[in-house]
Image (cartoon, rainbow over all chains, first blue to last red):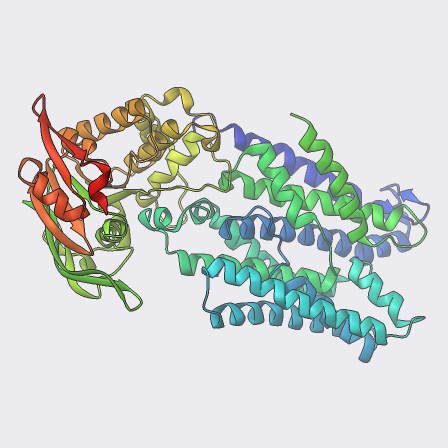
Length: 325
Length: 260
């Protein structure tokens, strides 16, 4: 194809992602902090255990989380024609937070229950936003949906506030706070297994429809004149992106900034055409979150919440990028 | 031979009627202008021809067949649109944007291929925009932008081109260029339909004129028959005079005192 410079970035990014993934399973605090020699895998049972049962599922989950948030961010920004939208905005993030808090407070802190409740309330947030937007009768559909999302998020976040107020400050409150800051410390193969189908389906759908995303970002009448079925194409992409976000949020908690910033970085690198921006954002999101999670579990003796690192590093990288040419 | 015909078409937004019992014919291969006051239903009429709006009563016929017989894809290969305003929240390059016009020729999940790039580039070349291909659409001047939107519609390669007020924000030279392009397209056999507030554009390039008022056709026919003092005065409800200068109709507003 005639000199498509935008696509040339994908191969190097793919290579970087593979290298980062490969290194990440040798990074950690066993047997000594930071990096482990691969040869240890041959003669240390414990090392094999750590790599296979702890690090590998966690690294893969970080990959899924990063790819999902970056993809969902790109998709939602384009279908809502608004570069400031982020994946959790339709009541999804705050819904998940409410569900997780509820589970920690009343049902003990079994990861399975937390994930179930978080997914349930994340999807409830989405449907409630959708229902409210359908009920209202002023303004355009996009405006109503965005406003409904804000209202539902506000309701859930005040709910989280009330629950935190009721929580035991010594046992429950730290756990709630830690969940809200995001992290992958509890990930096992089970979490990877149950989130992978929804996540991969959502990613594949967005990837296949990446040319349609461009069209959905145009005026309604222009998109129509080019043969786009606005309503259902938008709905399909929305459901795919939000369901995948709900699932990864239920596992990883609130990991901010990835879904907002990675699409901007991707556009900065290869322009607005989603044919290239979407795969670029996917790879960048994966690389970014896997690296942040490596730091989260390695830098200190205790775990650093992932959400803090993604916001901190994300904001710094973004500032640098916007200044450069 | 008319390529678009509307038969007894009515359409309203809610209780308000935008168009009532409207019938008209658009001849193939000619330029038809639609002139009328704000809110007279010009854009609604274009949207009905495009199929974006469905008539509440009556029918739209395209090339001898009811609109409903066309698939969406076939429709989009048949009619293109240059909208009045194109707000782009993302920074597409000119070439990327023009390439979007190839969509009706692609499958649902298909990406544009070499032929689509060639078509897009040849449209840019035809409009003299090749030097802009790598620029961002949002960085262009108003005139360049309108030409690029036109190039996007042309790369759709349709037989009919609908344009909603294509010259309304343009200076004289850009207006001249757009009108020249529309004239040339009609020479190549493309049917052009445009709405406008500018009688000069009508007199310069249009063959047919439809005058709209209050959702109805006030008058229609060839420009020579229709662009008259009586018709325009009745359409706009203010005294207007049409005179001939160098063989071309020129529309003058009467003195201010007579408006109220």
